[in-house]
Amino acid sequence: MVRFFTAGESHGQGLVIIVEGVPAALPIGEEYIASQLARRQRGYGRGGRMLIEQDHAHIMSGVRHGRTLGSPIGMTIENKDWVNWETAMAVEDVGDTSHDERSKRITRIRPGHADLPGAMKYGFQDVRDVLERASARETAARVAAGAVAMRLLEEFGIQLHSHVISIGGIKAEIPEVIDWQAVEESPVRCADPEAATRMMAEIDAAKEAGDTAGGTVEIIAENVPIGLGSHVHWDRKIDALVAQALMSINAVKAVSIGPGFEVADLRGSQVHDVILPVTDPDHPWQRETNRAGGTEGGMTDGMPLVARFAVKPIATITNPLPSVDLDTGDLVQAHYERSDVCQVPPAGVIGEAMVALVLAGAFMEKFGGDSIPETRRNYEGYMATVGPRLKYQ
View 1 (cartoon, one colour):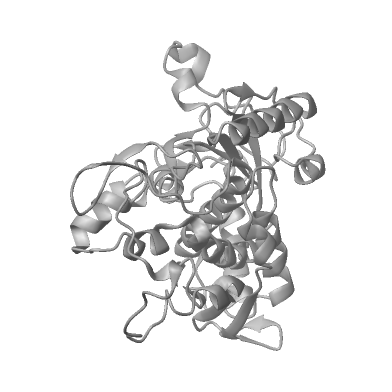
View 2 (cartoon, one colour):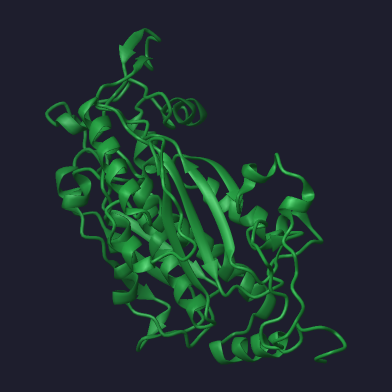
């Protein structure tokens, strides 16, 4: 089982990440993880925090001489903004903080954020006790953990990509073959240059209005073997696990596997992916289409795994919405905390990380070994059995 845990607050000292279940002898280093963290920090519509932080995950355990040991991998990411919040976010009781502007209680609740339910659930008198952990800053830790999972999947030829489908109602035309390098260079991670220009204009317009913009993203995992996940129990279905992982990302409100809702209005003959005759024993079970998004019956079907998700506009708005005060219940304007205008482009990178963690977990469940060589033997032995039962066995 591959699993991960994170700890840390947005303006605290930093983030802590533990990843366990990674087999021994996987080549990995801080530079590889840093490249994924840098991708998360880019994107048109990002706020001032990205000018402060230069995220770097320091590996503290689980790796020796550039290879994993099979033990839990521990990492930390420093919050450089901590120097401005040492009093407000101090671990110890610092007594009277009336002199510190950042230590003032927050009681103006932001609609659309975790403020109100979090304060009620945990009995907090200060909304900062909620918003610090509910912040999307935590997703830097997810990307660091996901980088470890990606490095594992790469050993077996599995690659993950993401691109933006829409922002603020501006929709991209998705080419049959996506130029992933062009997506990486796009300020909004969009494969359609003309739509990308209009997306940036929409972000500018939202910023000018003191507002925010949401959108949709697609994740594609290529070369995923057939049979990850299971049909036998609800909590082992791969599409359910992917959906849960993506829904856990801040501001995500909808997930589909493949086209999802788009196929609901069609007839079955227009939806299901025709299986082609096997002419190449090394590549059996090819399909004419991939409307199922690479899963059938809770298992991967050998086609690329495709997942889409919708990101709502960020809840922290510079022109705040009407709200109420936590203490009195009276009408106020919602609190404003420094934020992005649009987080759709970096959401794709975070989505890749979460899908990678799910796939790595399912991969190790299926082929698990204590080391990469053992896992490779298990994987290659299985892949030799997935052709037609009579023709190639």
